[in-house]
Amino acid sequence: MTRAVKKRAAAAAPVDANIIASSIHATRRRKGMTLAELAERTDMDKGYLSRVEHGQKSPSVGTLLKIAEALGVPVGHLFGENTDDNAVTVIRSTDHVDIADDSAEGPGALLPASGKRRLSVFMIEPGSDRLSQQADHPGDEFLYVLEGSLEIIFPDRVVQLDTGDAIHFDGHLRHQLRRMGEGPVRALVAVAQDLALRGGDDE
Image (spheres, helix red, strand yellow):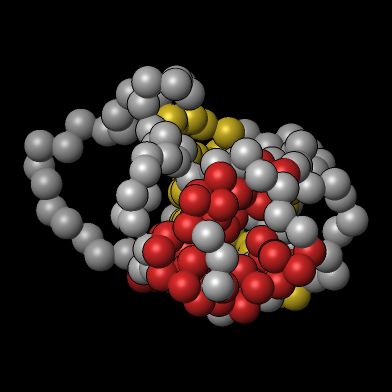
């Protein structure tokens, strides 16, 4: 198995309506587009689109097609089934930039998930070559491999990471982890949840 990113057939699985809502919001923000601009491009009411992004309205297939076209992504991306290349960034250990700091004293404290903060940080140790439970959530996810090798399986691709490699991706993309090899595997995971949406063009 190579370390390259490999394409994979989309897995059949039910999609939470909230994932569609957070996917539209995250993609729009990543494209640098305001809600007003999206409304203009789709010829839809801004208030309606805001309710869609809040998960208060379930858009029709036709509406999703218009939104996907306006955002410049395949409609499958809004279901978490198609990975926009800009939504996943892989950082190999060879790409690291060393910063000398004699004051460093090891890893910081791990933060549990909380409704009062955007960021949660935790350590994972994937089991013996088993797929973890499929996950998707609003916000961003960052994973850094401390030891061993693992795979992150998206619906349409697989990314292998070795010690020192890292990856950043949109959390709404459905993903699973799998341990590679016989040795121990440890990784540090940070999840930044989306803040509560507020009114206005910049939400």
